[in-house]
Image (cartoon, rainbow, N blue to C red; front, side, top):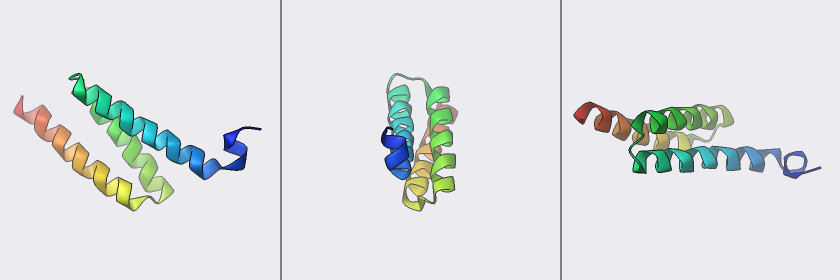
Length: 72
């Protein structure tokens, strides 16, 4: 039994949020490639889930990461 059986949408949302948190942490410690990869994964899953607000936010984050990568 577990959370997945009772609330699969909630579990998927928590998984996407965890990707975002991991990407933020990777960015803070200077791991831009890892942050970019985690953000792209979260963006792809958010689009698939129809979460357009989160997808728009993640596109902005990706642009920031690209800018940081190109400026260094």
